[in-house]
Image (cartoon, rainbow, N blue to C red; front, side, top):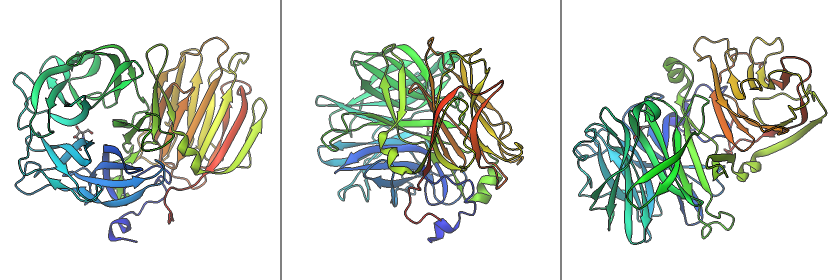
Length: 474
Ligand code: DQQ
């Protein structure tokens, strides 16, 4: 066990099949890229404590998006450099065979570049950093961060998160021939602060089907939003707005378009990871020795109505262990328990008079601790109720809900990934809802369908015991 890993004292709540660093603090995913047949994931990392601090870039590699190997820290602040107070979020691109990171240095917020000549293992910062030294006039002079870069023909384009003071969040568009000299084009898109917040962090801008998508993490909303619309090369005009995950802990996601030339099955999937923050006190995080976990890799797709659909990537199936199945209305698992499970439950709400129904997980035998994933037909909402998830006062308690209107006769599929303190719920390939829970009792391991009245209209329930993603997990 390394010194860093020995800092982790709390294994009870530590996820086993969601990515997280060996110890200490993690936040945003950064620099997602495929390189020579492997996926690289970088992330905001504070390597000295399980609390936020000056940011480094942690680094990991995977050949299938689910089993990861930790690599040495990729970026660290350079004393007296443009990133002396932290290497904040950014992206990775392949510049004609030269892997290049573009990220934000602080303070003040400026854009920086680093390159690698040893397949992404070590990074050399461009001596002329910063490559963009100040935000344009008229835009917030404090908020200017999280570059997202792509190529259009021979031109590199970049969007940077920003704000128009008093108006709303904004993303600013730049262009360059060489990733080093950047020309400001103008605001790609400006929001209304009442609708989409005051400052936009961590923009992602990319084509999907015949539309364009802008993902933003707005302050003060504390959750990620997507906009779908049209792009003419300088302006983006959104026509559809939606939520990526209203479970209360999903933020600063980053997407990657995976390339069929790298992986035979990739086919340009839009793959997204997001940061799942903790839902317990800072002291509990410090005591545990770790904080922050990545969502599962999610595939986004464009639906016929212009909204985004979401599913876990199929590679997650590699984690399935022992399988259990129950069939019949009210199917009730009595023999299987667990805190690392994948559960798929098929409900037929149509004929039932059950009121709200769904699944309960992490239940103690007497029900003192329990977390309910509930669908309410009256409000057409799916919720995670974690008011009784833990008897610990250090854990946050509450209910998170998201609209999920079902068409007449439409069944409901709840696809749940339970990973100790993570409850990640997908429903009908349309929405995702993720919450953090910290049951205190060792016997809070039960799960099963429930209904307000009568039997839950569940017809088939499958559960898999999930395998850890690390070889030597305790
Ligand atoms: N986290 C990073 C920033 C970003 C924020 C700093 C979003 O670059 O704006 O760790 O969580």
